Length: 241
Image 1 (cartoon, rainbow, N blue to C red):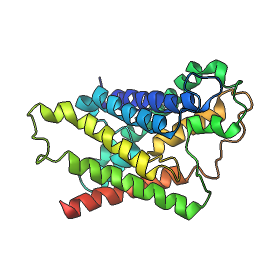
Image 2: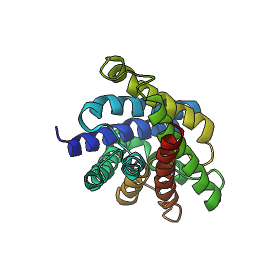
Image 3: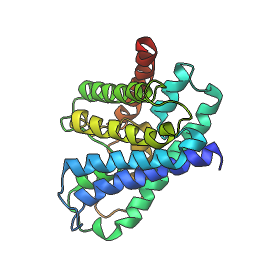
Image 4: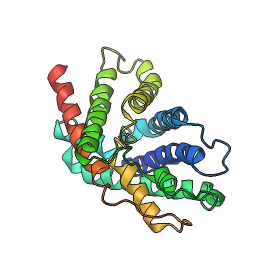
C-alpha cells in the first residue's frame, strides 16, 4: 500500500467511526439517540486509535493536515510529501462522511433539527464568537501535536522494543479523548482541517432531507485554527524537549 492510499484509508476510517458516533447520538430514532457527549468523545478517541493502528506502519498515520504541516514546519517531515498527504486526507475524510451518510440513510428524514444533521459531518461553536472559537481550535490542536510528540518520545516508548508499536496508537487515542472532554465543549474540537472540511463538503453535496446550511461562514475556523495550532504545538515540543 502506498503512503497516499494509507493516509486516505486511515482518514476515511477516522471519519467513519468518529462521525458515526456523532450520528448515533444526534440523529433521530437511533439506538444511541441522546446518549451524550461522553459517547461522542469516546467514539472519536477510539476512531483515532484504530485509524492510527491501521496505517501507522505505512504512512506514519498523520490522518490530519495539522499534524502533517506542523511536522513539516519544524523539519520533522519533508515538505515535498505534504501536498500528497493533504490530498489523501481530504479525499479520505470526504469518503468517510459519505459512508456515514449511507449507514444512517433512514435516519436523516427522521431528524428534524438541521443543526444536528450538520453536526454529524462537521463542527460548530456552542457560542459563536470567531476569535474565541479560533483560539480554542488553536489551543486544542497545539495540545494534540505537542502532546503526541511528547508522549511518543523514546524516553517513554523505546524504539523497536515492540511496546512502541503496540501502545503508541492507544496513547494518541487517549490524548484525543482528553482533549475532547477538557477542551471540546467550545467548538466541538475539530483539531483536524480534513476531518471538518471534507465532511462539510459532503454535507453540501449529498441529498439529505431538510439539511439546511453547511455554515460556510464558520468553516474557515476549523481549518485555520488547527493549522496554526499544529505548527505552534510542534514548535513548543522542540522548545521544551
